[in-house]
Length: 189
Image 1 (cartoon, rainbow, N blue to C red):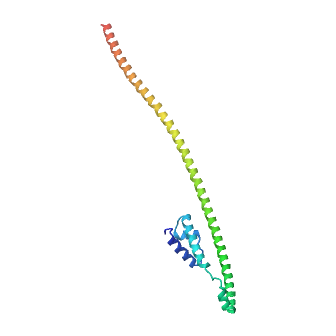
Image 2 (cartoon, rainbow, N blue to C red):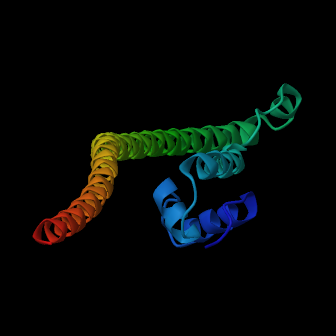
Image 3 (cartoon, rainbow, N blue to C red):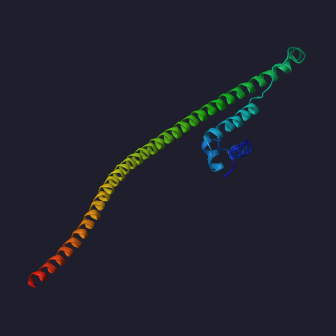
């Protein structure tokens, strides 16, 4: 990918123009291999303005002192110059119309890019909202799991207490059986 700087963009515009192709924002961006419309557009406009200035420079008006000296010849030259100026003006108008058309196309391209970015932004926003909802759902599930763990921990503590009490009662029952056996032996004797 080439850098979207003035030198590269001017070279690309000159190359396209030499091939008989109009340098447009999309063509320049494609030949660069990427780049931002906002970076390319002002440089492209500068190139077009420079080219227009080169095309616009035309003949100056014939001064009165020369017209007086070369009246007949000057009239013919002036007629040809006027015709040429008219042709140049027509070409300039056509060029300006072409630039206006290009500007309209650039505006349409930019509007399309804005629409694409807005659509992408909406899609990203929807993804973020869905992720936020999923995260909230997971938080709720985690809170419920924590409550379950607390309840089960209490039940485990209670069960451990009951197991100790059961062991104690078993010892007491064993002791009582032993006493009962001794008492029964004494009674038999």
